[in-house]
Image (cartoon, rainbow, N blue to C red; front, side, top):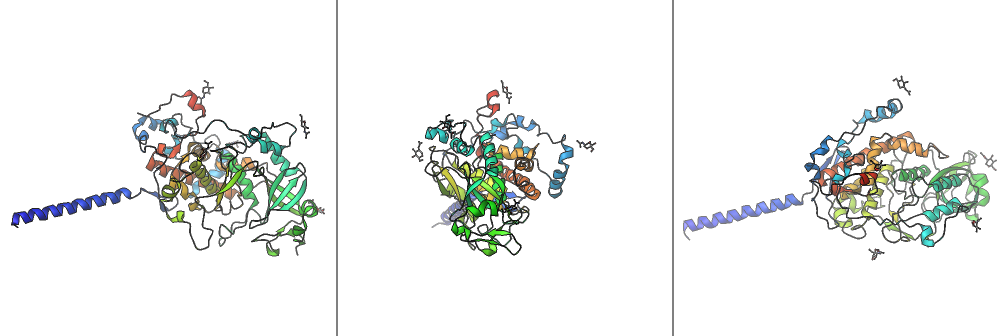
Length: 513
Ligand SMILES: *[C@@H]1O[C@H](CO)[C@@H](O)[C@H](O)[C@H]1NC(C)=O
Ligand SMILES: *[C@@H]1O[C@H](CO)[C@@H](O)[C@H](O)[C@H]1NC(C)=O
Ligand SMILES: *[C@@H]1O[C@H](CO)[C@@H](O)[C@H](O)[C@H]1NC(C)=O
Ligand SMILES: *[C@@H]1O[C@H](CO)[C@@H](O)[C@H](O)[C@H]1NC(C)=O
Ligand SMILES: *[C@@H]1O[C@H](CO)[C@@H](O)[C@H](O)[C@H]1NC(C)=O
């Protein structure tokens, strides 16, 4: 071979090697996920693009960049008129970290007149308007002379357990808190004692007793699955669920009972033999269960009176058909093992969104709502959620069992919100609630305090827990901000506020310039 030939061969080999390296590098770069630095949580996590429902990505993501008019939208009004009353709470929260008003997220909230310009339009998923109730399905009429619990059962509907500002729920809470108890049974199964009470009007309710004062925090060496349940967490969770607009948690109220008078004469022999008088002279019982049902973990009155939570019992399963569904983000419930989602940041994209029922319809958004709810309460014990079948497909979920929330006020469990960062999708209505909780005029803590003020065992939560919720709202908004930065508003927010009044008055720009 001639020298010039050799040179040509060597050069072309070198060129192809260089080309291949370039290609490999590029491929690697593209598979790298965008990484977001989360300063608040002090650690890095990944943000994922929404990749499901066969929709074209990024088509409208540039809406934000292309619309300069948005930059002049005024910020939400600051609270100047309420200075005197809010001084205390604001100083508390501002001493720790400077308050972020999330001005960049304001334009996507329904507080902004033009929020819809950023949304995907038309929405690719829309629920049918028809919202049948149990009364419709059973073809019975709700009569005035029915008890509140009967009315409540019959008005349970496809999209929520009760409508907004429900008089029936108000009456039901009053009944549960005041009506005479005529039956006391132990709820079989479970790790801790719970009682099913029957009231004089026939209502059944689940009673969770107070174990220790509300100021006592979770023991640091307790796992989420061995922690004691808290009756106040049940009550507060009902109020939070209502404030978030979900209405997927059965009504729950606090009540003080006289153990000697209201329980002891009614209990069955099995439970009867676990009653005793403690050395301090208090009336106690421990019941029978798998974990904490022995003399050293007894429930005690003071000396007779015991505080607890009462959640209304839902209609039987053959009437309101439902089934517990294992959460894809269930924890391992093991001392030594982590669940795969805790370490796999691709979990949502590769293993949840691609499979039914999460690959279409409302389910993934319902789960994100649930994750947000659990993060606000600090509940790590969400192994299942309940799906309802009576009303056909696309029913709202039901959330039960909130005894393990509100354990630690000073600590926010980051892993609870991880699914939101892995999926990066959220309903606009949920975002909107969170945003208005943050900017006020009433913050979440104010709304919770107000909502729970009438409960017989008020104050249900300590101020520390209420403040913690405000802080967590900010952290969720921070996560949403990271998602929007990467995927754009239309990629993150699902416009589900179609009945929102602005829709009727506004000229909707279907496709932004
Ligand atoms: C608010 O504070 C100002 C002084 O800072 C005081 O003069 C005024 O009376 C207060 N208003 C109320 C409603 O407490
Ligand atoms: C309720 O009213 C209906 C008729 O209005 C009557 O037939 C029914 O017996 C009443 N039920 C009770 C429990 O009073
Ligand atoms: C509770 O019941 C016991 C027994 O009937 C009674 O002696 C006691 O006074 C009651 N306590 C209260 C606070 O009602
Ligand atoms: C409900 O969903 C199932 C599974 O996706 C489907 O097979 C069924 O046809 C749906 N039913 C209705 C009434 O849409
Ligand atoms: C929309 O228009 C109706 C009547 O035309 C009016 O009553 C309502 O206040 C308007 N809503 C908003 C948000 O402007």
